[in-house]
Image (cartoon, rainbow, N blue to C red; front, side, top):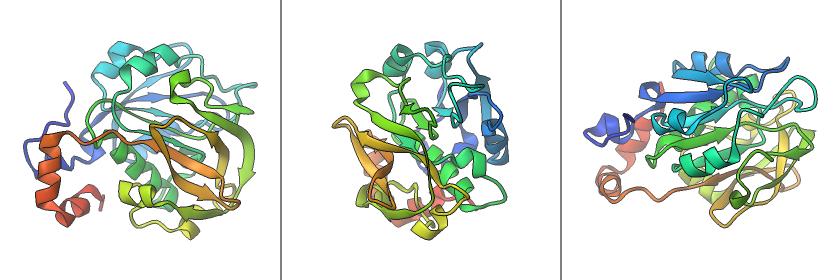
Amino acid sequence: MKRLVVISLVALFATSAYADFVVYDTGGSQSRIQNAMTALGLSYVVRDKDNPVTAADLSTADALVVGWNYDKYSDADMAGLSASVLESSITGNILLTGHDADFHAGGGNAAQTFMSQAIDFSTAAGGTGLVAMSDYDTVAFDYLPASYGISATGGISLDTISAITAAGAASGVYDGLTTTALSNWGQSYHTMFNSWGSAFVSFELGGNREAVTIARVVPVPGAVLLGLLGLGAAGAKLRKRA
């Protein structure tokens, strides 16, 4: 059973340290998703092109976390992700990012904080969430369901983040982070979004104001919302990791 059950302050603002995840490892020479998840202290099972993500996997997971796809045309592979499985099984918050945060995460840096808080965001509304790292393929994120309406361009290697949007700031993903901290990771992001469905909003903009991170925010269930209204800022602090 999923663990995001509202029974206490800890459960209401449950950090992902208590959650179970399915991790998709794209393979390839730059795949570091498992190292990043382990560094965050998260429990997970691994899927890849030879062991595809199934609806049964996602029925008991709090979120699917997809590692960054360095190059679909060489040794990285998204074949273990089915658009129909994702469409039927991803029911919670979704965050799609041009950042390869899993590649850069480590030692308590900004990439690790971003990844941690993105995963927390994916679980915040219940259901099964999704966090997908950047896709270096020319036609990026093409494994996602067509109903998401995602059009994205990969293969770019840009350095500077210009803005966090109001929706991004409200999400908690950027708590304690600045545009400076999100910039100049060697190459800060590798995908930009051209268009997306009405359920998605932009969270973060690149140096030329292109969308770098977008998200689908599922309304918080009524019972949880009442708790949020009553607890206010105290809950926000509980969501952060030490």
